[in-house]
Amino acid sequence: MDLKYYVRKIWYKGIYLIATIVYLVCLNKLNHMLLMQNFESSFKLLSYDNNIALKYFAVGVILFVIGCILLYQEGKKFMRGLEDFAEVIIGMATIIVVLILVILIIVFINNPILRAILVTISIILGAIETAAK
Image (cartoon, rainbow, N blue to C red; front, side, top):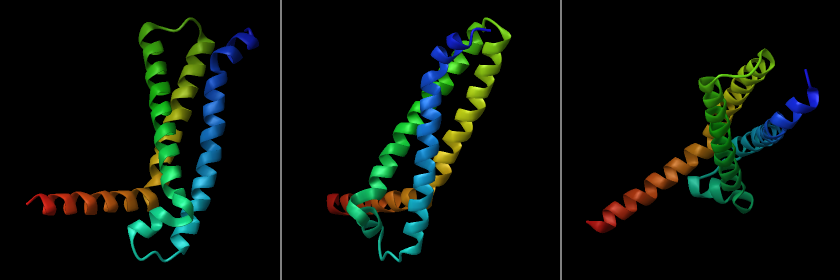
């Protein structure tokens, strides 16, 4: 087994793993901080601390999309067939880890940031619909 060969094949997955874990830890801290505040509206939450919630949401969307791309790539590799047992293990581990990270991104961004964004979008769409009538 050529370790350098496999490291060259999965280095970007390692970077994604580390970046996503750091993001999730920071997002968890932000969520706790946001939940401790008593915002009177979703707009206040989203504009808090120079729109930090929107920035975290944007990074979450980017990491989610990258995770989905990685899952798609690994699925394609499995459909074509993998060369050896080590690639099968690496592929399975990648799918499991990335799937867990993608699910965690959804769970962590859901409360309270995504809720505030959805409420804000609903209010804006309602105002547009009302103004159009």
